[in-house]
Image (cartoon, rainbow over all chains, first blue to last red; front, side, top):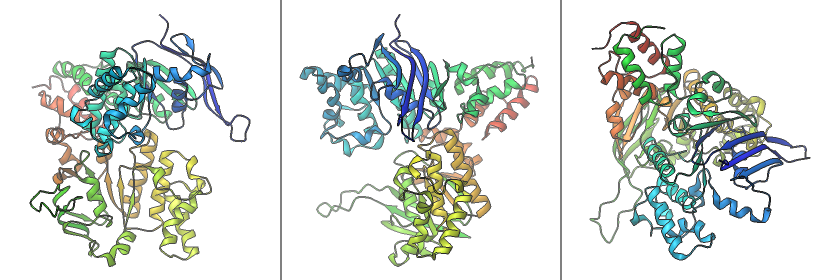
Length: 288
Length: 290
């Protein structure tokens, strides 16, 4: 099957032929399949934001290609707008971009630009609001009357309402409290499950990525450092630490036990660790 | 020695409605009593809307109580003649580094605070250099702040407060926008200021692994103090924290779950090494399960 999103030798350089020339992304070639849930991690300045902006055609690669369902998105530059409907992007702190009079109108802004019928626009906006857990009574309020977490949901709903094939979220949980973070993450997970589309989650929270991603893309110093199944990536705790990243605490604990000779495997969540440790403790945990 | 004292502090952002004097106003703080010693490192936790940021703004007179009192070094924050002196004592670092840097050169930014205090130029030079060395940003003194990473920007913001030589720094989620390395840099700096310079630290955070590094943890919920104590005392109450929409570090949660399942683990471990050692002890002790 053709991957939904593919990059071939993708490069981007800021300020070409100026003294400030800076290579932000170099030679990234990846294939993302329909339905994948991908975590994207990397320290500040590693190139991940530049990379995702190329994926929906916000910036044009200096060289290399982005293929959406097998087709080069820059083949017809005049149609790049259509790509941005199919690859939806939720920026960091998206609540800063709310502007409409009511929550519903704000969510409808994307679909309205897609020239859908009024019924469809209404329907999509209401469905999107449901996905992110916004109750009906909020829809007629001004977005500026809402709490920070609610505003964040409105902004995400606005992108979901365009029903993109690929949804990219840049730090969707930054600044939320632990409960708000958990709820929003599980909403994204269930949206992904129900719609069956592709999600890319950019995050500095290794715990969040470990919990929800099937595969993880690691960017470092403008290159792709790793792109593999989540458990494989987080098994490289030393390598990740050396490039300014971390593994979740529970992954670190289990890695340390493994290095001391106990028969445990890489764990991504507390639940997995409990499931591995309990039987081991009950039978007395012989070293191997 | 008591440095900050809050006595029955109540606060509401709404003015009482004159037409409906009986209509209840929404209180963000509902009678907080609190005292913070000089040189303490306190972490303030609570879910969004718990009142912790409002409380933090009380500490340097950005807000004053609707009723009750906040005393900073004996000065009442409600007395406007003290406001200037209070802010010389208590500095504040906010969440978004881009909102608090004002100059186009790092050292000028750090000098902004002391300049406003009317300090002599030679003394400002000395303070700026020293502050930049403390946060380990001296070699960046002539750089442009906008070209720095988030962690570096936050350290510049902290240096700006240091250069005013305040006795206390309040940090409101200073690491929320940073990557893991930036977070570690900022936390190391905070620890150093507290340990080596004796600066009183009040840290508001959603990251439990940061709260663990404090001497005392105060948990707020709906405008009241839910519980407080050493990190070990507070994080031992895993269930209480969870019912109030808070988290515990994963190391603590793992030990707690195993403990609840009948394994002979201490019920409160705080860090990764502690957790690994406790597990190893259990695994080598054959048949430790009850």
